[in-house]
Length: 416
Image 1 (cartoon, helix red, strand yellow):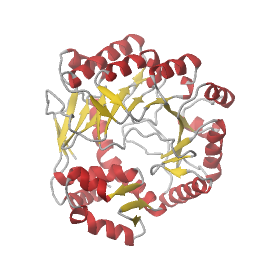
Image 2 (cartoon, rainbow, N blue to C red):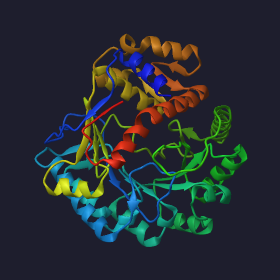
Image 3 (cartoon, helix red, strand yellow):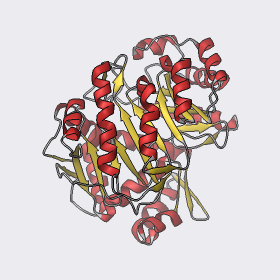
């Protein structure tokens, strides 16, 4: 898999230069002139650890969690103090189970509000056990208007495979009717062993019946550094399942919002990653700037220690070449299911067709993309192969990097 990723990277970047992350420690983050800037906050604590989850997380310990939140406030000041107040698109809380600290969510929002005007809303990831009156009340008071609930499956068989508890759908329905959010998204994992279209359809139908107006169907990926023992579905079966599900949701009148997400209402949306630029706060959070990408340490204790020493908790940084940044832009823009040539050219100040016109014309000929009035959109075939290549990308880059960073708080150098 790494050979395919390497060859693709060299061709698209027109360079033998690998992706090199170093322990470069900048004293500041310059974001004032960036466009379409989003905010992300990572809360790593969980009630229990799901073995299939690859994200930075640890068991919830109240005292440690409070110390972490104090450090988080300080990191925000370290990054933002002295800079002019500016507008940002959105704010998302991820984890972990960030609602475990729902009583301090408003504190974080207020702190960020001293530096930013958030224009398009605030979202948070929820575990089904977070759907309690006191938690949702705190989130509403903090200004949260979008929630993403990690259901994974309503099916008892798959809940057991994933190590999750049975979901009380009656309670879920009642609580969601009592608390109004602009977007109620429910996440599901597809391509689990033996999973059929009927299984996935039942999950999605249940989601909409319970009050969701947005669903996400993420492919199961077996990360090497997790303790997961679930097998992966074969490629042909996976494609058939994804195509059937996509056609079903589109026939129901849903709008495809990204490769994996669909909305029953046009204005419903939930995505913490499809921003041209973003600032990340908290352990393992990433920051994307015009010419670089930064990753905070994965260690909670080292994160707290570094911030209390009045130093940014950045663990690794990559300085992009122009084509590397373009590839990153195209990869995540197409995750949103379409790419406007005018947006690319406005962002980079370069002629799109001079850099990637040939590749996009070939993709059209292969039936992966469709072009209309300067906008490229994914076909069903294109969406599947995006996922298929993403698997190579994940195993070659993300799996390796996260594996190292979960073991080393501040590695000196990683070459991918």
